[in-house]
Image 1: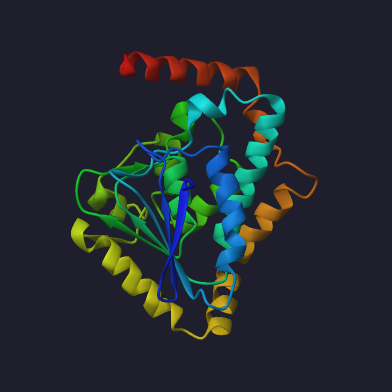
Image 2: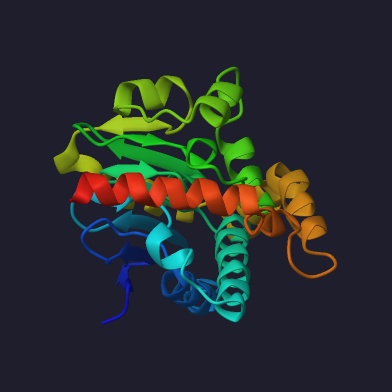
Length: 254
């Protein structure tokens, strides 16, 4: 079994991230995601539900692994990340995120690719912590967040990097709906089925129009190859910030 499980529930594809303990994102996750995307673009699939296994939707990037990649591995990772995030964001069919627990940094970005984000009531938190960690937002991630979290709290979300319990996440547009934990997956599947019944061409045309500006910005960032923002991740300042962050995490684990 891979890190992403694809299961059909009628005409809805249920995509579950299974990388315990925190469903952290690495090259392999995004490689699998990119490989799965074509399977979602067939007539038999009318909608997608994206969720995680356990207490985490996703804790974000596996920073210990990502920052240990060789230069070649790092390039492969950035390509897979952008392909995965942009590909999900660009899907023409409805995508519903069932945020079952913590969704932090890259986890919140993954949820932001969806058309509707439901979050389970409880102690799970979500937020975009990238600047606190010391890394810049790749264009694909920034545009997904800018689109899905648009509103008066966007700068707060980006600059302060806080994480929020469900009610506060809802008020800040990090999610679109909060539901009892036991109802999360049934509600997500029901909504996906409802949206999937909309004539596909009408839905796809409307979705494409809504997301056109964000998708154009994503494409422009990669017009000459790799998004230039990734080079910021390789600067001495970012590497030093990441090393300090890893040490803080290591001391907490110890």
